[in-house]
Image (cartoon, rainbow, N blue to C red; front, side, top):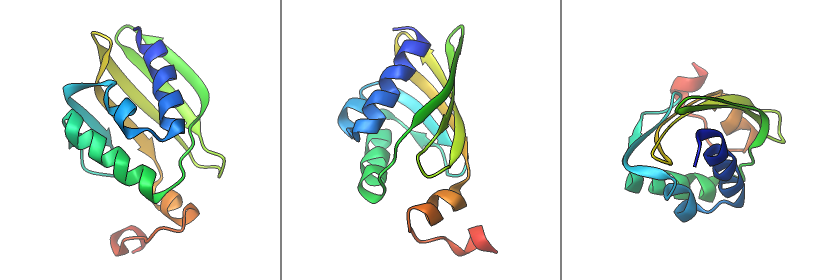
Length: 122
């Protein structure tokens, strides 16, 4: 699967909240680095991260723009609550090897009524 096609599939699965299917899109030793958080390394850890996140918030990814350049797909997204962000997906042999995402963590936590760590509001 080409990077753009894979990210379209990723969005579809993300919006269904299925951590099992989502994790299957990643290489065994993939890295998911949402820059507001520490990197998550390995498919098993990425699976656990998505299970936790889907359990704590109703997340929806709406595609604004989706670009492809070689092994990379770049996703500009928004959610129904107004949060915006972008993600970079390095796709190797039809699976995600590296994902890096940029979004405002404090806004996300507030919008979903989740606790805000003291270091984010000081």
